[in-house]
Length: 387
Ligand SMILES: *Cc1c(COP(=O)(O)O)cnc(C)c1O
Image (cartoon, rainbow, N blue to C red; front, side, top):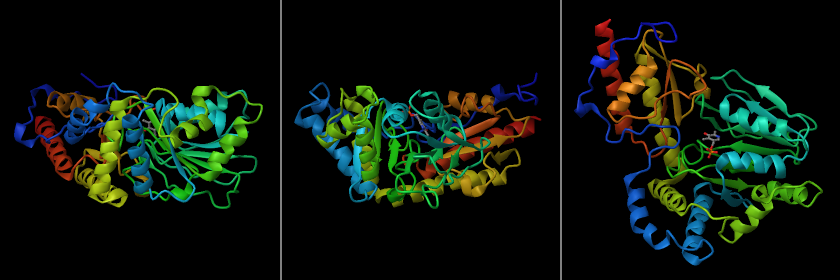
């Protein structure tokens, strides 16, 4: 029997992983990602007094305030920047930006599934010119370069589908009227950043922030806020749900335009405060470097495994993508591990590679990564002896 990439399907069914090798927590997904037990505890304790109560009253508004103040501290928010939030996840923010931040034309770096989705929106929008698209092969990086006529530059800090990480730095020579929009959905909270280099640094809470999905959060610069006000007072129709000025107004009152998922806010506030208590963003950045580093060192040790991202400087600290040789069947290994409670290490579904994708968000301790590596060693050694 052969697997889709040509190698034999090894006899994975005969392999059992000894229980003592297993990590304490087997969730290594790239989003939704593991929620720490202490967050669930807080939801049970703190949550009961706010769940099922009005989002226009103090208890829920206080949660939103905790989130906004916590993020202000975590990101050392520059003067004049504001933390704004709304419903619909990062996908909704792409549409908000398409209506309320892109004036005429965007430049997108497209290096995988997530970055291509935002580019598809500004391409389809009838009120915008076709964007300028700078493409990179999946697994490699691209860089924005200054272009006349462009009023928004857009790229992901971490392209979650491929495990490529890009710097957050204004393109050299970019004008004051050219905004930088960074999709930080999987990077925010796990990777260091200097927010003066972006005008909209936006994310959703189900990755490094270990919460549930459904919200978007953005750190907006004064220039981004001014752009939204300019566009939304022009003749362009902007749907109310996607209005950034409405989101800004509501956020200033510690509210959202429409009803938020309160549990998501509780889990998010707990995670922000936990990261701050551990030492803030510098701590989280050091931890994800260390844990992803363990996986890269392991890949260097095993001849069956190689990093999908060949340029070491483009490798993500939070999502590690590792290719396997043809006769080691990654999907079979992911299935086997799933039976042992280690979940969501399959590659991004549309990438179609013989690969494992392992997230090391701040909630993932070194001990669990170490254990995962021992489990993978056990499986690969068993396969080798089998062949
Ligand atoms: C997960 C992810 C998204 C999508 O987030 P939603 O909250 O599901 O809309 C967008 N961009 C990146 C980089 C992501 O990792």
